[in-house]
Length: 171
View 1 (tube, helix red, strand yellow):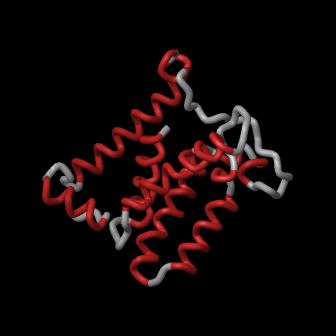
View 2 (cartoon, one colour):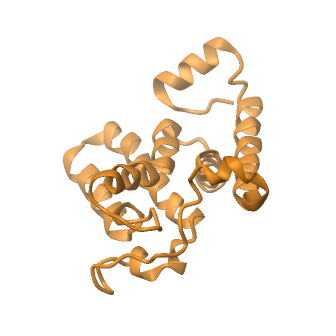
View 3 (cartoon, one colour):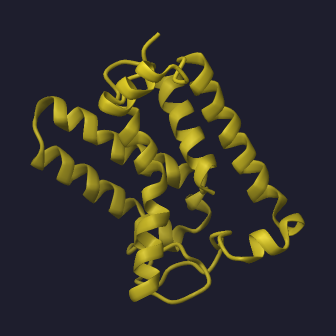
């Protein structure tokens, strides 16, 4: 669920922190990175039905946050820290605490939980009625992102280009 993660992460950040110096580009990217990282790792390294491995653990998001804090300075650090915020919100929206072997990895050993599994497969498209929860989440994500689009007038070319350049939401 890509749009679900992006929409909910943006909404939670907006509701809790508002528009203060937050680069929403990094929050949106961070919200989908755990799935992208684990998909890449699963292609070359891990096997199993889950699709949720290291990137869906707390250790991964904490390591990312520490690297950002140590490697970057001032305004750049504040902007890029949105990656860690989005990443953590991805874990929340996945409900990863229900898979403690993965969420708290490696505290319970080096194996990852087999469930819950990522809903991504061709089956999502070939049998959409079996995946109504996934599609409902995507619709909710689209609606949230559409609200941001309208509320911050991102349909206006100049405003959207400015957003793409600095990631800030302007009234």
